[in-house]
Amino acid sequence: MHELSIATAIVERAEETARFHGGRVTAVRVRVGEMAGVVPDALRFSFEVAVEGTALESARLLVEEVPARARCAPCGTGFAVGMPPLLWCPRCDRPAQELVEGRELEVTAIELEEASV
Amino acid sequence: MCRVVDVRQAVLAKNDALAGALRAELAARGTAVVNLLSSPGSGKTALLEQVLAGTSARGVPTAALTADLATENDATRLARSGVPVKQVLTGGLCHLEAAQLRTQLEGWLPAGTRVLYVENVGNLVCPASYDLGETLRITLMSVTEGEDKPLKYPTAFGLAHLVVLTKTDLAQAVGFDRAEFAQNVARVNPGVELAETSARTGEGVEALVERVVTVAQGGGVHRPAMAVAGPATGDPAGSPS
Image 1 (cartoon, chains in turn red, yellow):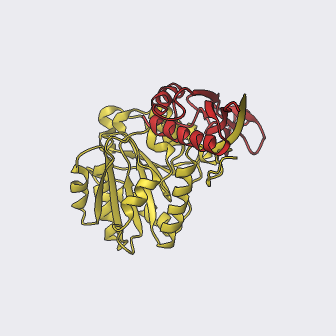
Image 2 (image 1 turned 90 degrees about the vertical axis):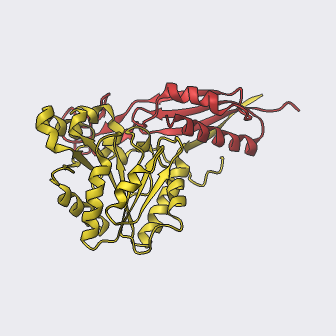
């Protein structure tokens, strides 16, 4: 259950942003890749725990799940690796050199509600 | 009034940056870290007992750090090899992080250590996401765990520089299918090397030690396709944009 450590890191990041820009955090948008080793449901649950007693107490966590995609360097084919993953090109049956998407674990945006003047 | 601030930062950026710094710092001191990942009960400690003795017998200054949720049993066992050993109790945390490792090494890591083995918490999920500044990441599993384990824990196997099969003395008894296992490993991590070991018979231990020492001396490591992944690295300095 490292999702709690990850949720805590997300909350810290959002708090820093809120301090810098001012305002109250209403939502945190994150991208979670299929191969990130993080379970979105567990992350949502952990986020609710992590926000307790912080300035984010009523903030929502918006998770965008990113399917894992690889690319075959020799033939240029891009393909979804699926789950369980298959990192071999479906076109030429050669091993994929890189995962183009799917290991993301990132905070993409923070939604802030500005205090009314 | 509501507004959206773009952040675009990897959640583990802090750990990744610390791990990178630790890797550079240790490299400057001539130390290579070997990060060992596996499920509980895969025989990591039994194998490591022999690997420590084997590495040290080659005249390579060796040390080991072992992480568990509780008990110092593993450190006691590993200390029999005669190399400096430290037990880290994570107090319930399911994985090691780079910051934790750095703290543990301060004032303890003997000068001149060439190979530092880090036995991560027995868990194939969480430790996979945390770079510890290792030069070599080894994912281990025993023949009793089933050929399809690499498919069930694709991130742990997909990010390994080397995959080690343990308890091969039991392979026949449990009907372990090596070809199927190799195929499953290749599915998630094409090109990764497989090593077979038995702590009971000593099979493969020397070859594994040889592999580790070669890497510690600057030999190359496999580049997993999954590790070449993309855009999930943010600005480690962490200033909100």
